[in-house]
Image (cartoon, rainbow, N blue to C red; front, side, top):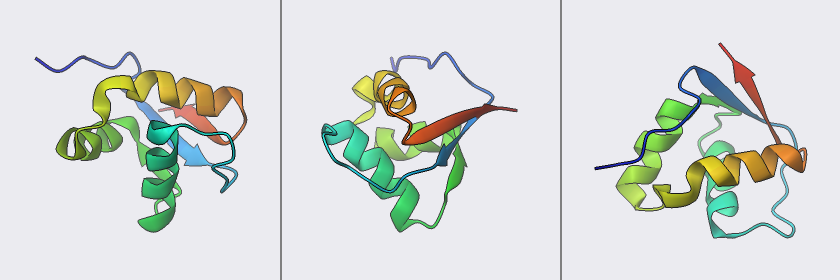
Length: 77
């Protein structure tokens, strides 16, 4: 059974296009936002994409780390 994320109505906005000192999951999040020209996407879409790829285990923690470093921003809808 997949884990439920704690922020269902949030979107993620890419602020800085950098992967310096990022882990694997953080790089995948930034790559997804950058390569798909989706500089703002919902966390629901991110989870759906990463469940297909098989990287969704640490996604909420990775989002929080990227937000703390100022690379992305979470927006509550």
